[in-house]
Each structure stands twice: as C-alpha cells, then as structure tokens.
Image (cartoon, rainbow, N blue to C red; front, side, top):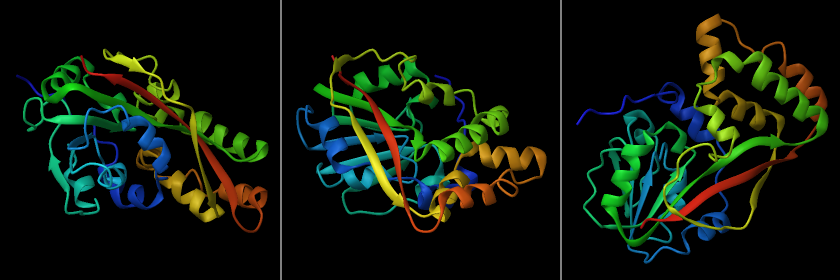
Length: 249
C-alpha cells in the first residue's frame, strides 16, 4: 500500500509552535471524550508537540501519540503514560480494536480521509469515539481583529496551504463518516501581552512560508501599529473552538 505524502508545514519552527500555541481547556476535552466506552487507551493522531496528549494523559491509562514529524515529536513533553511514535495517521502501528478514544487536534485537514477512516475502524474498540477539533481566528477588539484579518488574507493569503480552508470551515466541508455526537459550544480565552500574541503569529505556517518566499518579514512594518492598538498590559484573546465528534460503528 502506498503511503500518503507527508505535508510538513511545522517541523521547521517546531519549538516556536510549541511555545506559542494555545492549550485546549480541560472542560472542552472532557466533553469530547466523555462518550468513549472506556478510559484505557487514547490515540492522539497528528499530535504535533503533544499539547493535547499531555492533557489526555490525565484521563486515559495510556495515550499513544503519533505524528509523522520526528522534529515535532522531539519537542513533545514526556510523560510516563504517553507513548510517542513517529508514523502517519493512515498507517499506524496500533493493534486492532484497541482504542477507546481517537483525538485529532488541529490536524484532521491534513489527512487522506478515506484511508484514515479505514484505519480508525481497524483500531477502535466497539463503540469507540473519534473527535476532530481545533480553533479558528482570534477575537480581541474590532481594530485589532481588522489588523489580523488583513495580515491573514491580503498579506499571507498566497502562503497558506490550501488545506487551511478546511479549518476556516470548522472541518464541515470534509468527510466524517462516523455517527455524530453533539457537544456543547466552547471557547478558549487567554490573557496575553502583545509580545505573546506576536509569538502566536510567528507560529503560523504562512508566516514562515512568506519569509522564505520573499526574504522579508511581514511583521517588521506592521507590528508597531499592533503595539499601538494593544496598549500596555495584557488583553483577552479568545478563540471559538469547534469539534466533529462521532461513534465508530
């Protein structure tokens, strides 16, 4: 069987990604996994640097966290009950019918969905649950939101991978062949300084691609305007969270 090509947009700045990305609220992850048939084994697919894996390790006896990027895995936080493995989502080393809950945090849009669905059905226990989830644009204040929107599309639009549009659509435009489970709406709010927010922007894959393509820094001339709007001290930064959750029949 041929392997799906690995689209690696994050290994080149894995440490920046680890430090700058927001962490999912515990209540949100609990809402996603509460319908799982047990708490024995969780598969965190496309785990990146393991931000979700570490939280899930508090609820499952074992978390098997996989990502095709060895660089991302090298930046992950080690825990006794997390087994990190470098391997693709579509062809894992997990045993048949061994997994209670399958977590896909901000990664489902990268997969070969037909092949991944077959792999999910192979490894899931009867009644196993899968959740594909993530976050979209920040909400801070109207003037700052407009500044971010201009950076996101007119400036960086050509440098976003095409799969990014699926995140903007909350994954609703992708196949999800599992029996749906409704979950309540959640959001994430963090109190950040302007430098923390700029660090988050640095973690965008399009930012890295723009710099490589043009040899220039899109923030160099734009950051002063953001700093002026931000003012002194922290601001609340909010993300609306989305999730597609289903039972693996």
